[in-house]
Amino acid sequence: MAEHKKSKNRWKRFFLILLGLNIVIFICIAALIFWPVSDTKTPSNEEYETQQSSEFIVRTTKKNLNELVNAYTDKLLKGTNHHYEVSLDEDVHLIGELPVFSSTVPLSVHFEPFVQENGDVILKQKSISIGLLELPNQKIMEYMKKYLPMPKWVAVDPKEEEIYLAVTDMEIRSNFQVSVEHIDLEANNLAFKIKVPYKSLGIEMEE
Image (cartoon, rainbow, N blue to C red):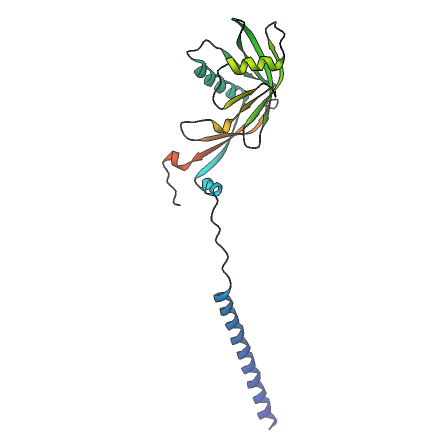
């Protein structure tokens, strides 16, 4: 009799375990079916643009950049009577000639470069001279703005005594996008970020 009772209890425990297991499985299946689906995040324009291009950091020296800047300047001034050049040393030194009072006088301006968060650069004027003439710095920069040919992406601000280099607005035939990452003239450490669109390499990415 006792043996029969023990066997009955064993089957009862087995039944309860099996019932509990079935309940757990049912709950799991119900949860998978009715659990709210998380929203699929649509990539923003910036994220999508990143997927369509790759970025590279290019490091160079003052000498290399100096040669590139002056080659660009020579092409810009070709066919004009104007002349100026840039020298990168401990700072940015602009040397040239400025038309003043029906003549030309030597111009010398020293700038300190400051990289902006968006990759552009502001050249803050440190010192400025225009021959032996004694003119206010702001007036000299007004002459620079008026008479010196500058690329569209370069803006002279006489009031703030600075020049804004919108490097990110430069138009490059390859459609590469350039921005300044770091400039340390004393350490001769210059870095640029170049974004290469895949389309410019003939690579089409699926949307």
